[in-house]
Amino acid sequence: AVFDVDGTLLDTMPLFLPSWVVAGALPEFQLHCPEDDFYACAGKPLSDIVRFLHMKQKGVQPTDEYIASFLKAKLEAHEKIQAERPHPPPIDCVVKLAREFLSRGVPMAIATSGLKELVVPHLQHGGVLDLVSPEHMVFASDVKQGKPHPEIYLEAARRIGVDPRDCRAFEDGESGLQSAWAAGMHVIDVTYMEGYPAPEALLKAKEVQVKERSWLQ
Image 1 (tube, rainbow, N blue to C red):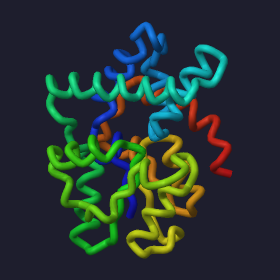
Image 2: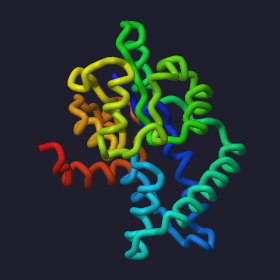
Image 3: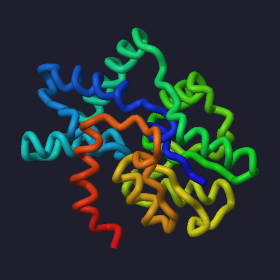
């Protein structure tokens, strides 16, 4: 079993949105991040989200320097915001399933587009760091191509020594679902699980994504 983290094991998405808004409002960036776009981009590498927003709003691709500066400002904003807020809680319906797998000895890995320096503390404070061994955690920085490319899920399967075709991937974001599917895995959209905390903006994004899901053919 391979799990995403943000929006899958942990309810981090509401925590991450404000830093996008704060960084985007800075005069050197002037990049808006509407809630609908934020959830539509769930699972994508951070740099790809910046490219998506920039192209949509300005009609041109941002420079690498712009992306690096924006993400630096976003991280600084996130750290300030997080210092005033509690760590994100676990998503109980997903964690319960993961713990069942753990008790049965099912090999497990993590495949996340998140930053290791943020993900690991969040997992620890959420009481779920014990679910997956550190060597079985694959972060965006561990692969050359992020979701929706299958590389991160292929790497996760390799680390636990399981054929991707024998793996189940648990994801909330469209790019992550596509990534795991392209890797040959059986994919589970956790946002449809009973008890999943789905905000209205996520439900709207899902409705659009399902209609446009050409990759699932």
